[in-house]
Amino acid sequence: MSEEKFSHIKKCLQEVRYETGASVVLIADESGRALIYTGTEEPHTISLLAALSAAGLSALQEIIMTSFRLPQAADEQMLMLEVPQGEILLLSKPPLVFLLVFSDKTRLGMARLLLKRLAKEADWRAILHQPEDQVQQALNQVKEEVFSSEDKLENDLFHTLWQRGE
Amino acid sequence: MRVIWDRRELHIKVVYYGPPLSGKTTNLRRLQENIAPQHRSDLVSLDTEGDRTLFFDLLEVNLGRIGGLQPRVSLYTVPGQPRYQRVRELVLRGADGVVFVADSAPHRLRENHAMWQQMWQQMYKLRIQDVPVVLQLNKRDVPNPTPVAQFQQLLRHPKGEEVPIVEAQAKHNVGVRETFALILKRILQR
Image 1: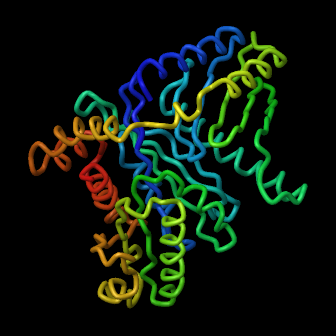
Image 2: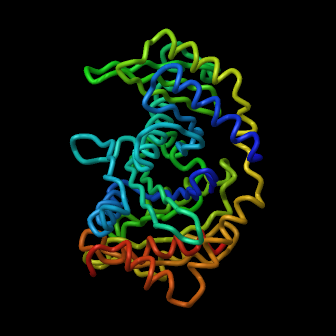
């Protein structure tokens, strides 16, 4: 995705978050990877939210297909989770999954409307498409450092990661 | 693999695949115990009461800043039970690398083979057949473990490529780190 398109989609997400007062607005792919997000949560939490949203919606698709004996899942599904601490809105529009976590300022009607609009308007092909050279460029940057010496990966990276020796 | 440029993040997905009770979740538990908390998430397990994985386990590891980027590795396990074939396929989607955790107990050989076959079928279906695969021979401490050579004969790469092997006892924290390091190395080397 070009930087321009990315910025545009990111801006759309930020607008939805601003309008709804949500604490997180996130777009993930069906494999559970966070693609774009805006919000206050830690990156680890975002990754978990993305993975669990994709999994939860896949399970939901199975429920719908089984209940209505459908050969394939419906194009779009929305799921509202309500717990004492707040609400979460999940929207599946294959191959993307949208998630909005409410704050105490968020109103359901507005959240529903804006999330649906976002799903409708978002150029998902642009979101999903990542030119191979972009990935390769990133990978090369990492490779250059990790494989700069024979034992770099083992000595430096794992030494940092591991909190205690075996 | 996906790059989120505005956050300078490189997202890598690794799936631990294998027959039921072969030690996939144990691998992730050991990683969680050993990796410094600031570099990992908590282990999220969607399991049943009997400690069998129902949907998946997920552990995220943050490798820190490398080459100006923040590589983040999401480690998933699949449920091993036969009836969860579709869930396995779902979890496998988008994987950048796969660790096949085989059970070294001699009576589990057939199950290892069946699951290995299914993994490759699913990888071809999902068009991820070229991602790196590491074979972990777990539970090497069982009596009369299946010899490595027998595994090499039975669990072959469909294109005849060499599959790197790590002998492990995940329960005792042996071979877990080596497996993780090896799959990561293979992914980054591509």
